Length: 340
Image (cartoon, rainbow, N blue to C red; front, side, top):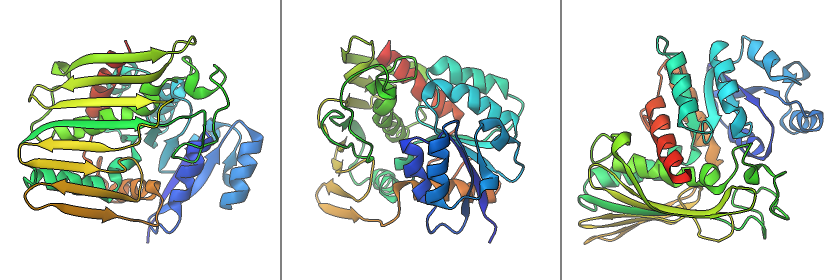
């Protein structure tokens, strides 16, 4: 069977988790990696058995390799725009770690640069590719909870006290040297994890009607800032043109968990662990249901598999989630309003 060849640039903690997703996939091959950090490069090479011929100490060399079909950009957010453009100019398809760019202006610039070309660019919201999210959308469209009314979604972890849910090392103190607290690198809770519930909110709201991102109201904004000018706690409410409302909270200091509640006129859907697996969906209506989702596969496997299938079938987007660069722009528009 033909396989899609992947390359990774930037070999931090999230890239390590992502790389595990290639295990047991028959349509995907992690062919090449690139890092300017020799220690990280050697560590990746050793653990993943990648040939020396495909381990590069600069990103440009990886992009010159004709065998690579798609590049996963796992660099700090402030470098995303530059390397998205370099990947696309090298005729590579792109999966970029969330958020795609620092702000709406940057992703708009990318769209305008390639107006005459069909580009493949996806934002790495891996949770969207998990079967539980597809099931949630199916339940909504089957009318299980009736007409949609609102949603509440949280993503909160105390990064100072324990390993977070992705298994990264705990952070000993708040300082600018750490990426998530660096304004220059795209840190702060809104860009780092607040973007997750924002993206889910738009996905759910779009099941009612097509979203006009220019007409979304961002209200009731609350933010707690550190002296280095990044948010460590934030919340807001979204009101869509179709009257759907979302209450979103994100935190680096509180264990808010990762639960989402979607309210309809005839019932509710509760997603117990929205961003990872295993998880449970509870449907509360006149016929209560509990649906368990357990998978031995990495959460990233579903994402890699779906995008590789898409490439092998010569499509610009998978059947689900069928998002485009316009959705990336729309969500960045929301995030900009939340931040600013």
